[in-house]
Image (tube, rainbow, N blue to C red; front, side, top):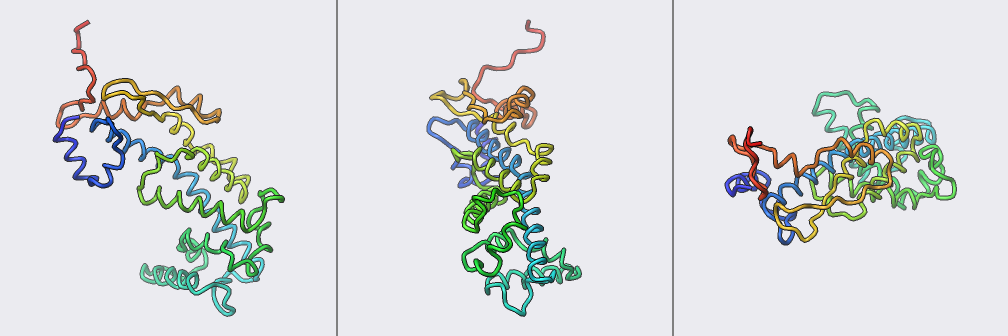
Length: 272
């Protein structure tokens, strides 16, 4: 990759963010590929993260409404929420007010953050919401593992992944990323088995992850090896139609010139 191009990309992305993708022996081209590969992975995780977040807050809200016989179960009195969570509700209402939107319950529920909803799984709510709301909130969860502790652990792990994805942080280096996605999909099934069955229509994580590549002691321009495809039948068939991040970057043009990845020059048309 030409030096001036890389420097312009570095200025756009920032040196600290881009440098974490550099590994020993990497060319500038490899760094860009790793960065874009991470972007692709984050993009591929969005559908399942979105599905879980929406399903979780709606299911928990419905369960709380049923338990306390009020759609506004989060409002005192009585003071069911701790000070920090009550402050989150106040903030959500204030934000809606600034936008000129009515304080309808559906709008408030949607305005509350994923952090708010996962905090309701903490120990301090053991005798407020749980265990009574476990079954109505997670009807698809196997009975032998259906505990507040199990749900809290899983959803806080998902929250950590979600925050990295939504804050544009690096996740490509996580060795258990495929398992993290599988745990995410399983959690959707805990809330809504129907939602889990619908997810494959938009979830292409297995397809994207199957395009992973690692350097095998090679220098710029030498071959890269594919990682093993996760055990997912969709990944095998979809991989036939994918185009690798690396080849797409190599075909990119900047100021009328193709990016040089260190490989041989392109053959001229009509050269045989």
